[in-house]
Image (cartoon, rainbow over all chains, first blue to last red; front, side, top):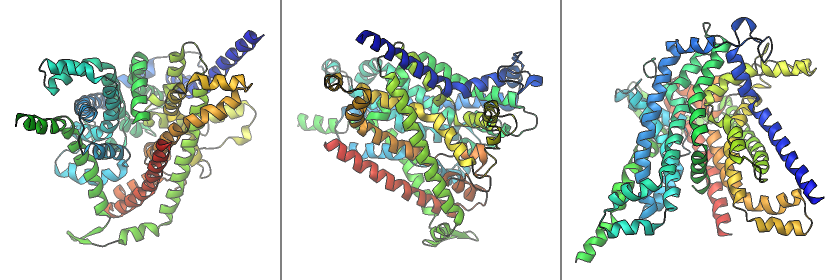
Length: 275
Length: 294
């Protein structure tokens, strides 16, 4: 009797979960369907009679989309690399050494995490103009790193905190400096956290919009999010191409997430909850 | 002597590790914030900058658009966080019932978070589209044709439509953190309720919710601050319109700065935004401290 009730409860859980997920993913499904619809059948019905990959190919041959796509890849990858370098060192220092300023640093990290970009833009703008960095990848990498660094330090600090000091002590007895201990012992043990932080930094830089909108003007530096905004209402671009582009914009993130879900989720929780 | 030397050396050991990132955050985050805010107290006239005190603040506080943008921002952030909490809690509770293939279900419900806000905005512009958008299509399909409207083009619905979009985009973060919090609750506590004959509702009310409260508080305030500064959706979907009905503080500041080229006035509005957020940050820290003491 109790077993049957338990079974029923279990089935109800799966049904509720499925309904929830169908509702939540309906917009994504709709996006993909429109992206696959031939132009003459557009908005006839949600699932088209015929599917076509012409819209996607059209996007691939459009420089107004592909160049920004390339820019986003370069900007996000560089941001992720620089963030990983700075964040891992900083997190290690905060995790392993006791010093007076560490409390102040944590406060600063939490603080920079919530500064509104619209306010920073006011002083970034004249600075980048004077420095001659307007409309360059460098400018976006620089400002995006400010965005990614705080959360990544928090992720990695939690990861390093979880590695027992005794493991490192053995290396130190063997005469390794703290830096060597860090690169030879701690880093190899925390590849999961590093991966999570790297993915997170890439993702944040990839999704960034305000800075791209303000600091780029040409196809040579414009990120994909800004290119997408420019396509809206553009008479040459149709809805099915817009949906194809939108889906392509999310695709790298979907793929990376599908592969590294476990690592990434643990990292997010480490940075979000404990930080 | 040697002992003292090694001690001072050890003391400074954190520096090469932590200092570069901290200097970077200071130079590229904290300092620019103050440089920006400083602009709010100065005015440039024929190339000469002069201190004008609270002139721009007074200007901002006398602007009707400022106050409407403020109320829109609170509406937008408040309901976004509420939506996140409800949907995130729903999914977290379902995922926490010992289901099979947890990582699959957790991953699938996470998908919306991966879409860049710019792409999400474009998608939802089409969903809300007047003639052939999905929402109106569905409404006509279920016989509610009289409800169809130009969702983003009407002052009464634009802000709500943008808010729903931002709820959809980020609830997964709440699911993850709430689920992690639930998994930290010891199972024996639930067994005790079961022995007393308590059902799922009692378990949620007397065990899950009280244990989750610190997590909920932290994450909701952080979520609120993140949403409060959020610009992308209101900008791309409606540009703050129609008739400023979906103008939030983020888009308002941006327009004052880059459409009227008044960085000084924008900086003053920025100062007011910081004050609004500061109130929340203080609440956050106070609540956090109190819960930590317990």
